[in-house]
Image (cartoon, rainbow, N blue to C red):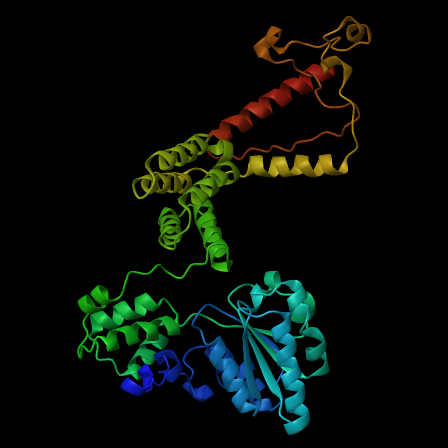
Length: 429
């Protein structure tokens, strides 16, 4: 006698997210830009002719639901693969089954591949001949930018649809469908916890339902649900979007927005030292010599974090971010460096002029190395006016063009004065 005979055979219970999965397009919450009247995906469903597609969007935005509804709309077999657990062998088996299904029953197959970005290029190539033949309708779901993660050949044969995270009003509608009795505080906490992810909301509701409590308030939600980090994929699309937002906020001199994005990244699990390194980059790229102290502040913040760790060291990063946001801005060094690098890449190897070559031996001195070199400290103002330090025949250059902001305003005046003295000295020669 088995445990099942003694206690009864337990039937699997579908998670709430599956139980409430929409049965029709009209039940889908959100994605109005794709599923509303006259919108692209709605028209694709109404056309009666399925086509291969990539559904790109954050977790819990409805990618699997849309694929299932697509199979239902076209009376096709829905076959799901996960790129995490599947390989080329699984793809071939799914395609063979699709071939048999088409030949025996005339029934088409929607082959849905979840997290398709996890397949390598060779695995993605395995779909190509079957998509070309029309044997399968390929639907890939990804949270990563297809431009970077998808094989261009496969990408060219599929239409990309971009899904959006669910807005609070969408999540409120979904929460109402669960029948959970919540007050306004609990509702707000659940929607905030979900962070645009329908599955996350429904999983949280299921946890609360399993407690047996009839009326749920905000305090109970906070006590029951373990604290979870915001949706954040280190190394993924959102990671680079957020560090880009932080950099642009600092460059745009918005201290509050800079703090917002920095704290968002820390809250999401970003390595504080990665943020620190990016802050140093901001100091040299966007502040430069307009305020050289910015680089020192950024480096000090790095060192402070290394000594204190979290959370104390994070305050030093916040200090650096605010300082850089409010500092005068200049990308003159950044532009000068790029211009010099571009020139060197395209230019030939020019010899060092004799007068500024090193002459450690008698032979080198006999060959003219260092001859007629003017020692700047012996000249008026420690400047050898009219002297040339570039290779012979090189065209005039003005790569570094300081701004009129911060310290660079003084550097600009200094450069103008030195050039005036050069021009005077050359007239006398």
